Length: 433
Image (tube, rainbow, N blue to C red; front, side, top):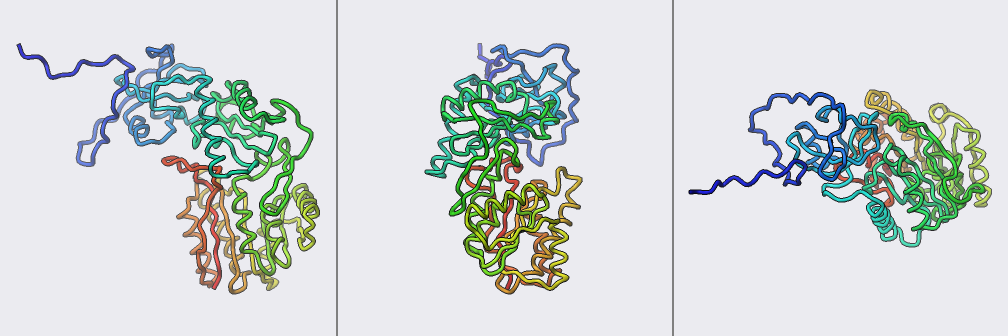
């Protein structure tokens, strides 16, 4: 009697090679209807909650994107949020493991394609791998981003190192619930004098979490000093912006000093990341900053570096640029490093208009041969859109412009393929002919 050629059907939750993506020639399948919301969680063979995906979610997962949205789940899984879950398709085929969020539009954040334990060893190994990259890319450095969330396989976790101190953000429920474990692992591996919790960010509201900050481990006695090239900086890890400083721009700060010459202008200067670098080579630097507190810190930083050629103007950068054009001022080097102009897609048109206005003014202010270093941290405005805006600004300013460099965040902020949000920072070095 001939045997069947059909392979035995594996149990639900078993691993299976990914299905090939649907080709263009295949007929359109009928839209899937999600299963009814569950009253109790479905458990996999290892006892972990199991969350199944609709076809679109499966395709997104198999294409390598680390986020799955709520609309792509096969019904509500009846979970509180913060769990490690098994991810399956609607037939029960195992796809991987992820963090689950109940309140966010992003329901699942990728942890692994493999059926491995997500335990203390898992997090220890991911932290060790993140540290190894920084030691390879930035040998000898003691100030850098140690963990960059999804890009380091640790979604919802940011860790910045400032010498003997660590500044940490827990951005999703799963990391918040493992806060003590992460702190213990960081303490054991890096022996910092203090670990500062800077989870005082609005994104936590989207996750059903309350912003918070404080000393998590060890001590904290005030601002820490660190070097950026030849410039000495200070960061207040408890009260400063972000985790204390803008570490994503550190390599771009140092780069700016190589192009600085003549009379220089730094708009949106904050505490002087760019302005102080410009002042090491330019004859005179004007730094424009709207915050009185940041301007005061900038003056202190200039004095600490014995840079007497730097003037700080407290004011609105848009107004300063417009007035400078009207007054016929000219500069040889200009830096534009504004805050994000768009927090969501609806704000993109206004953001592009804002970017164009300041870049148009800057191009009008530059002498022939002048350098414009212009940045955007708005990930909703991608690099091509930013370059198109610059081309439009140059045309309106009637200036012929060269692109000298296209840059992004530093090497301690790796970009994850398939997650464009990790390539949020654009930095162009332009030269006016």
